[in-house]
Length: 433
Ligand SMILES: *Cc1c(COP(=O)(O)O)cnc(C)c1O
Picture 1 (cartoon, rainbow, N blue to C red):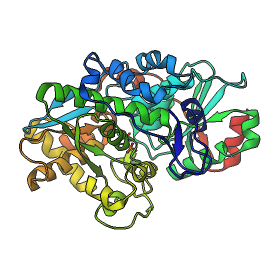
Picture 2: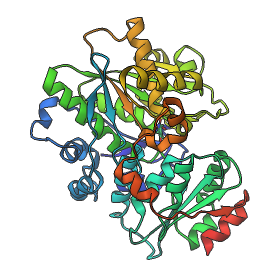
Picture 3: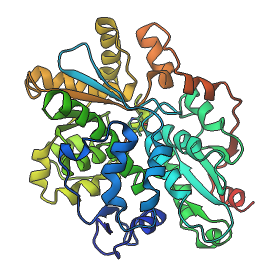
Picture 4: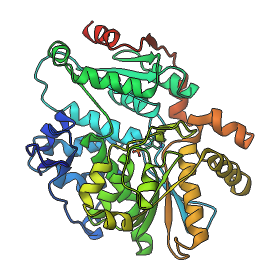
């Protein structure tokens, strides 16, 4: 399989080269030149997530030096389940993606990327530093995935005072080869400084750097596997396709769902829930696509004004009228997120994180309006465990949220983050040291 740029002006690369490059040379995103076509029976002998991932990703690894390693990569990355559970409302389900070490779906992508990068040939003998800017969840997932991995260091940049207390603790708890920096600035400043470092050829000649952001194929490809797994389980039980509502920021998770469907998995419709950042709902309502400044919400991992994977969506659906017909999208504001968390707990004893609550509410809208028909099975995608956002969720439900064991283990460790000035020179000095 070769990978081409969404902008069409960069050479096609094999998987390993595309993984190492991150962004294509023309500024586009790598996409597979063609998509394999599966039918559900192709997975008849695959009964767990690592096996389904292996079968699904085989064509994407074909012809690459990492191909022979794919079974080992899948076994190393997919060590926890993505259960599909019934909700209290009929024919509604939740796909729980938060059973990994840092209690958010980003563990799947980060662990798979780390397992791939560990097997790519290094060219220097010097450790490779992964520079990651985070609004909270990505940094922890990347830190956990690379912690203790020989040959790698991680530098996490997060906006001081703008992540939840538990997110901050997680970011600073790894120690060893993972360092956390609390930057005196906003997430955009963290991202700008990380980009500046990655574009600093003089720095990279001395201190090899790489990124782990959501446009990486190493994060996108494995995310298809949990959609395949849940859709196949549902199909085997009912003979019908499963429809999804995906909470969306940069569209990484949602594009993985779209790709899995395009590869022939039994996935029906896909609805996109955003928070008050409404670039996508505006586009799907007919406006021209235009990036907007991001606004801060209580679903902070989705505070995105320019969804980076939008280019992959328009590559898949070049005709915007067709693209608009294909998806439903809605913006859910903070008050509605709060009301949804409160009501689902009071009426059904269900507790959701603020991100997941956007999708729960969108499904409620689809059911009420009849857009999601009686008889159709829908799954809300749960992107994080509510205990990760205890400071928002607990006051709303008036109760404590039990902390899952893996998250408790991280919170029990001491945490430390170094202060960092909002100045590229300061970061450069640290990376050179
Ligand atoms: C990152 C994140 C999202 C958004 O995912 P995208 O792939 O950027 O759309 C949603 N919820 C949580 C909890 C996240 O960490």
